[in-house]
Image 1 (cartoon, helix red, strand yellow):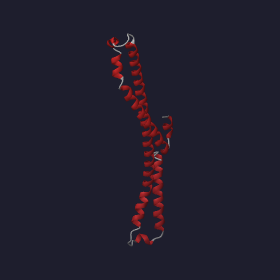
Image 2 (cartoon, helix red, strand yellow; image 1 turned 180 degrees about the vertical axis):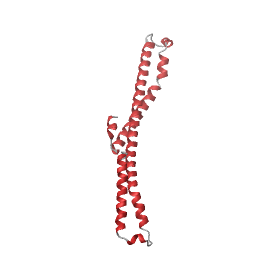
Image 3 (spheres, helix red, strand yellow; image 1 turned 45 degrees about the vertical axis):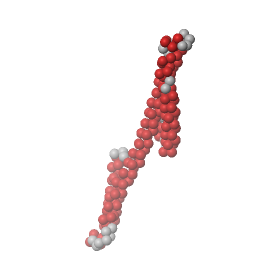
Image 4 (cartoon, helix red, strand yellow; image 1 turned 90 degrees about the horizontal axis):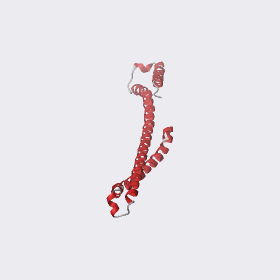
Length: 160
């Protein structure tokens, strides 16, 4: 979890994900194996079975049953810890994806107005607007100013 919280790269995240899934699978197999014996040990711990076995067997089986319950409790704790680590890993991965999408959105917001203006000005029909050369540079300056304004706004909002 400490490595995941420090911020892992995407290739390392896949490694951790594989390891966590493997540990979770192992815990599940162990839990199923031990849980299958719970009822049998509880039954053997009953004093009625002393007629079949020695007189101290019920106490031994009761202790064994208690140990089994403790082991199952620890296995459940380990399972919950692994599930928590998986949640942390998924949250970090989602956060990285959100950060990338935020940057791409700002880039699109910066470029879109300039692309629209370039598309409109690139139409194939004659306008009196195009007869004055200085207006070309005014449009370019407007596009740059608009892009700069969007970046400044995004930084002020701490989006980038």
